[in-house]
Image 1: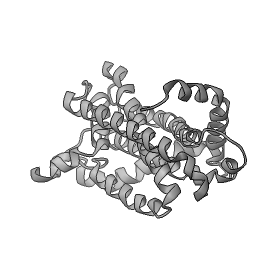
Image 2: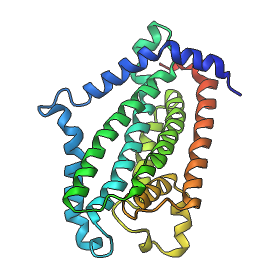
Image 3: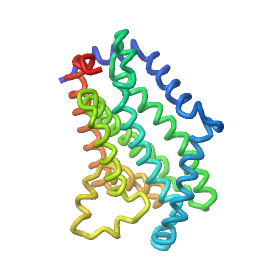
Image 4: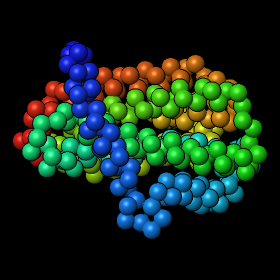
Length: 261
C-alpha cells in the first residue's frame, strides 16, 4: 500500500527540516510570556493543584493518591489533545512554506507532534516531583511506562494525519473536533474512577483508546503492575490501525492540498 523505500528516503533527506520545526515549535510556544519555558512545568502543576482542590473532596477518599492519579490521566490526555490539535492545523498553518517550496507535507504534522512530545516529557518531571512529595512508591514496573506512551504517540500520529487531511479540505472540522475533545475528556477517567460509571455504559467508555492508554499507564505507575493484557492489546491495535489509516488518507490526498490553501 505504501512505497516504504521512498518514504524512508524522503524522511532521511528532510530530517534537518524536522529538527528545525521541532526547535521552532518548542521555543516558540511560550516565547511571548515572561516565564517562558517554565510554563511547561507550571501548566500541569497548577492544573493539578486546582483540580485536586476541586475533586479531592468528591473522589479523594475512593482514589489512592489522588494527585498522582489525576496527573497520570491529565498528562496523557493533554498530550493527545495538544498533539492532534497541532497536527490538525499543521498544513494550513504552514501554507506559505508549502506554496513556495517542495517539502514532504507530513513533516509539518510530524514536527508539531514531536514538539508536543518534548513538552510531554518535560511535564513528566512534574509527575515525578508530585510522586516524591506525596510519598508515592516508585515501583520496578516503571520500566514498562514507555510502552503505553509509545503507543499513545502512534495513536496521535494516526489521528493527527487524518485530521490534518480533513481540515485542509473542510475547515469546520477543527470546530467539530473541539467538541469531540471535550467529549473525550469526560469519557476518559482523568479525575474520576471508572467504578462510578453504570455497568451498562462502561463498554462505551472502554471503546475510547485514551481510556486504555491512561489505565495502562496508571497500572504501571500507581499499582506497580503490568497493564492488563486486554486493555494493552486494545491500545496497541487501535494505535496501529489509526496510523495505517492516517498514512493512507494523507498520502492519497496530499497532492490536492495546494488547491485548498
